[in-house]
Image 1 (cartoon, each protein chain N blue to C red):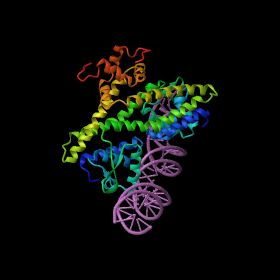
Image 2 (cartoon, rainbow over the protein chains, first blue to last red):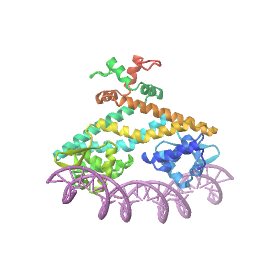
Image 3 (cartoon, rainbow over the protein chains, first blue to last red):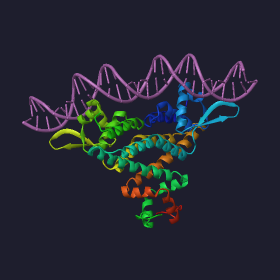
Length: 183
Length: 183
DNA sequence: TCCAATTTTCAGTAATTACTGAAATTATAG
DNA sequence: CTATAATTTCAGTAATTACTGAAAATTGGA
């Protein structure tokens, strides 16, 4: 790995973190390398810099593309595939959450909905359904909120975040949280 | 696995999902079983219901306790450890995010801060540091926001979420997003 | 069309992670 | 303190997941 010490530490760290986020070490490293790179890299460059096989890079990049964490670009007069990461960190954050939602939340919601349709055969079932109902409501609320909020511009979002919990004071002052309020 | 069909499906699903969230299949199943259970279960009950070894349950429960996804309770006149999950789904959500923050976000923040302190030795370094600065800012903002918001009561939070992106309209109307505003 | 460059697939193997059973440890009641 | 019930540890093994190299497929230019 012929990276500068700063870059190398970052790449290795993302390798470790990758495994906690459901991608393997090498995929984490590929992402980190591209995140830091000032220009798109092709598969050979990635394989060489990180010291793993060309085929591993192929599989890893396929995964990063599927997570929308990387995109494919081309250079004129060069048939090779080049990869880069979206530059805007907000955009990165958004696609991460969106993909997690698709892969982890949606299947769970489907399961919960199905289970809640089933007829309870016992008190145990009735209790289980009650628990699932609570989980279902929380997930619906949280993802619905995210769906709405993610469409705000990065600046608006940033402002909202900077406001933090103070948002609550402002709103309660404005009466916006009063039950029955329809605005 | 002598569970009712409804419970069994839920347990198996959480086993699969577990692996995507950094815990293994059996740990996911243990959590799901306890989440649905109307009463605390001891290790033998868990091992028997799910069909794995007593020692596996011991290790798995240790992990769930460390994530604060389960807690230990006792029955009078019974020396065995019983486990249960917190009942409030908001509380569950909070501890999950909190633990993720400790284990994944904080180490990354530390790394980023260190790397930003290092002296850049090249243009490549300078570019890498700029990227890291952006990432650092986003993470600080998002976690700071979460820190504040997590202290709101579940009802307030729920109201805020139900408001969704409309929060922005109310606030901009009230002028609360104006730069320089100190409330 | 054919050729060469590039990417993908996949079977085999390496590496990692999960799980078990037996032994060690800890805790409690008598 | 001793006996026993309960839990934890851990070495060994099973199962899973990651990685490679060679071969197949795809792509674009001549």
